[in-house]
Image (cartoon, rainbow, N blue to C red; front, top):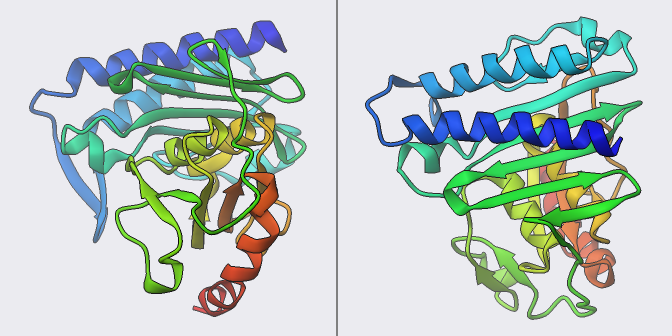
Amino acid sequence: MTDLAAEVAAIAADAGALAMRQWHTDFRRWEKSPGNPVCAVDLEVDAMLRERLSALVPDAGWLSEETIDNADRLAGDRVWVVDPIDGTRDYLRQRPGWAVSVALVEHGQPVIGVLDAPARGEVWLARAGQGAWRNGERLRVAARDTLAGARVPADALPQVDADLVTVEKPNSIALRIAMVAAGDADLLATIRWGNEWDIAAAVLLAREAGAAVTDAFGGALRFNTPNGEAFGVLATAPGIHAAAVERLAERARAGVKR
């Protein structure tokens, strides 16, 4: 597993370098749907990752933001779950809050997770049962046990959460989850249906750093599901997770009905 994780990290680094070379160039960009941007670099990085990761583990299926889904992935025990550029908005705005996100999922759970964030000079790596690192430094979640004062990566918070504290918010949700893993934030929550490729690698990073990670209701997350989605993600310092679930419960119940 250690050797395989290192190979995955090397491939993700090459993908990050490819994205960096084109970051300030004139490339094609458009919207897949209103408010959902994509660019030619997303597709180029996706193609490179698929070729090299599939060669590395030939029996693994494929689930990526930039590839048409194929139900064949559900028949196998292993699948690559990939977002070639997580945080495309920041990539297009020439802001550094984006990353290449790669996870290898086995039997519904990530066992290798890599975030390569070259614009930030960061390489994040986690192996199931073996810990999580940023640039070679072992990660550990913050030891917070009260919800009030918890640091949240957000531009702004609703009045009901005025007792929380906003910190830097990269556009990449994977990087925001990773901030919890590193102890740079205490809580990250989404209350909507989201895609597995956005969170798979970062969920493993957070778990291996000691964070509590669930869906928006506090339930277990599972990957390589038929629709490739989960309802929300909640990553927190373990001492505040129950309080965060309780605070978000009404909003989660309202959101899941939409």
